[in-house]
Length: 390
Ligand SMILES: [Zn+2]
Image (cartoon, rainbow, N blue to C red):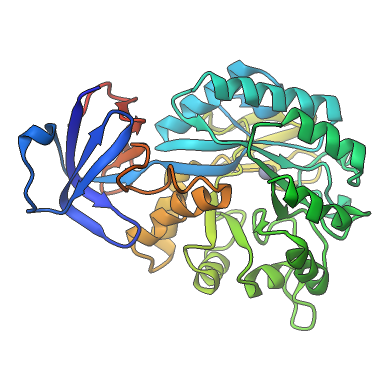
């Protein structure tokens, strides 16, 4: 692949280079030029995106499905369809997420994630997020209670053996059963352990951070809430510098004021926006099934038919980004960090992806001023338009 140069408003972690130029060399970013600096046409053929944003490709570390397909289908084709939807939202890397289910189903889903990753779809599979089954049944949310159970050595072994070679995020309720006693060894295996679907007290949560929990699954949702004399898991996550946290920025799961306070408290380097999207994402309203439970999507809200509990979202990550810019006083660079560099750091892949920096993969999203996706560039290739420039 020849060298190409792209001109536009380049979103870096701390600033925007208006009219800057980035030079791509094959799959990687070679040079980043501020506007007005010496650029020679010998560096590469120049394509102009004018006032559009050139952003790092977005990264979603928590999503279950899209376009009628579910990670729990256990089918590679489903992952390809989900990846196709992601790339249309400017997402260049994602972490397929499983639900509480019979262990053989989770193992089949993990196998499909592994084979899906080998196919190198246009939005890359960066690992697997095991959201359960080691959760607190009382905070199950839309998880099927029949399949929630406590951690034990044989269950962990079978899941981790199946997922060998994949980066693992494991959501766990530390107060349930003997779950806490496994945190240190799971961390040693290289997994990111995330507190979630939990009734932990403040003290239990803080202790789990000492034991090795470094992340929090959808902060505020399915989690013991903040009370003045018992700050709960929410209070512990907000109080601790040791943990990063996910937020579902759809305005349904979390009130904009709660979201604003969480971001103000933890900062853009400790918050990852996620979609937690379910299989109806990208399809509109209707009746669906998630993990064996009936779900109705109406007016952009996905709820269990029986209890009315929220059952994931139909959010897209570029819309989450737009919401956060609308609801907070964050700069574009800060907001973008929560969907690129911070999730890349959580996964430990920030040396390769997550920001526009020489040496990293040329995974980029081109946005208009309202963060609609113009193109997604994956490892130096234009995926949506098939050509550079506008
Ligand atoms: Zn989820």
